[in-house]
Length: 64
Image 1 (cartoon, rainbow, N blue to C red):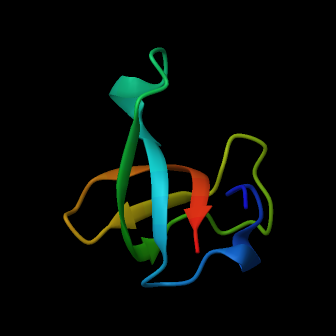
Image 2: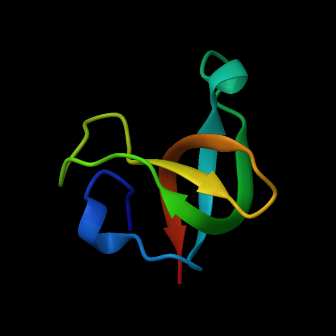
């Protein structure tokens, strides 16, 4: 599942995000969602979240 729609992402979900510094390379970082930072229901580049370890990025993939 992709991370462009806010309703697909729940606090505690395991996701893969792209950090700001990794946007060019496309490296993904895995973690659990602590907060959802994007307020709108959809974002074309992915919903922005904070992981439990404090890193912030846009969700590229939701792991079931």
